[in-house]
Image (tube, rainbow, N blue to C red; front, side, top):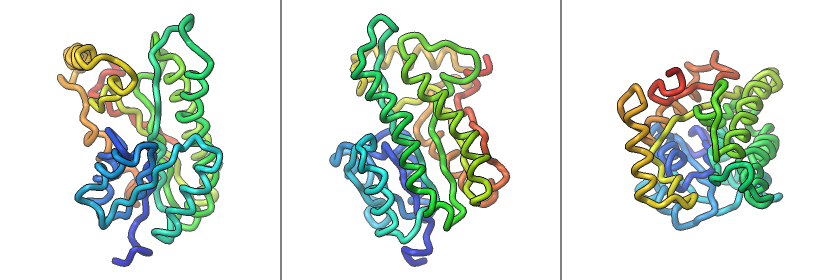
Length: 252
């Protein structure tokens, strides 16, 4: 299969965790993948062993020129975009009285505004392939649950779920599907990257494993598998849905 006829996938936040696992899953499924992130070194780690399928682009998706650069790079390399995975996210742990403007701005910029404008810029390419947008949300923000000390991250994910549903209706006439994945507690190292001590993060994962009906925390591969499945032609009737993949924690 030539580069121009292989499925072409863009994954933001592709250097670590769910993003890296998703890039690997699509590459193993025969797709070409553009992984986007701020750290060239972690992106290279994601591409290691998949250099014929995974291409890297070091770019902060919150930059004003990021949507143009990402879409142009993908189309130039692959000739098309079939799937856009809005996965990149940043978090910061603080209660209301500890929030600062810069942290809030950074979280909303990366977690919410960037997916809006990247998806907007990719619409023509996605329409040409009858493509799929996958928004990676969080099971922690589903339903009527609170999320103390993670309110800004949570509100951005709630908004992303709303966009998933709205885009499904808006974009259906153009042949574009919009779906969401809401992961539960997944061992991605995100807590450590957000400043949590390694020991505290391991303790948190251990505590959550005791609470999750499945008896364990998730692995990035658990989420990546579902992302790939939701983008298959056989899943074409799934549109506007946000699928919780959390070991049943959100229904307890």
